[in-house]
Length: 359
Image (cartoon, rainbow, N blue to C red; front, top):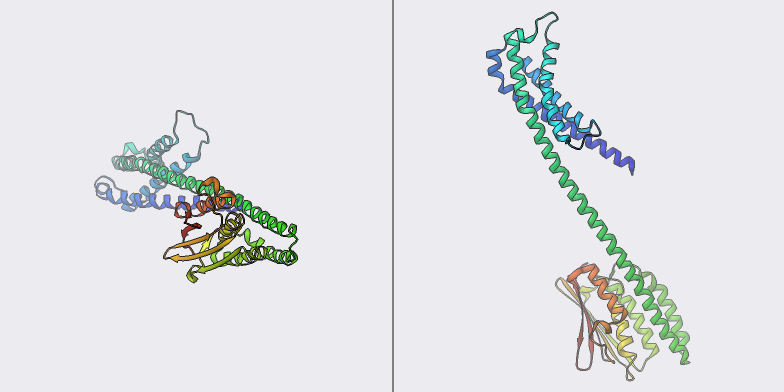
């Protein structure tokens, strides 16, 4: 990971240096073009000397800008680095012009101020450098600070998004862990009641339950399920419950085929059915009927489980662990786009989940 980070940092430095050199050369050539006429009128050197000197000045300004960007490492609190960079670029202009004159002038020649043509060359290049280079450096600093601010804002947004995602995943896993024990304990309690009653079907039900749990438990921990997978859980569950109370439970399923591939939180349908059995059918001496309706309405999917048993109080405190947890899981995954509603009828109660039809 550190090697990748170092490589990326090196590539960034190379790219930034290349951009600066290109900008410096472009501005230097532009300055040379602007000085062609005064150079011809006041300097004896050829135009090639003008462009050579302006390019050297541009590269000198770029070098000063880059040098004082990292050196010295520590600065007094009263000195801002950008000020040091701009001042350094300005100081490098006359110093570089003087150095160019010394290097390009033959040995033994008088100083440049003793010759009018050389003085004109020095003054033109120095004025042009002082006029363009510091302001260009200042513009580059402003642009880099703006780019840095944008990068920081994006980095903070990505970090915040990642933290929110991690918190969401942790909360979702916690709720998912609550669902599985809740379902398993309730199912085992039902089997225990059947065994305690001495039912001759206890052994058959226990074998069916073992086979069902062997297939169902791995599905309970999947992050996303579909309506079709949910039905694969609910069908054997209802068969088990009907074997336990054959005279008190009837059920029917009405499923829209276009809704089978719709994604939902795992055990969504199982939670609704299990609550209908626990709160509706079990407490009722006469038992009742469970009807499952699943339909897709354009970009929405509605899952409704209705029972004619004892009923469930329409309040948060009466939802029980399963429905309360399901409501929280729906909110974590879909936000305000999903709803869990309790609908009371004359002789029945329905629990309805209305969620986006994502596939």
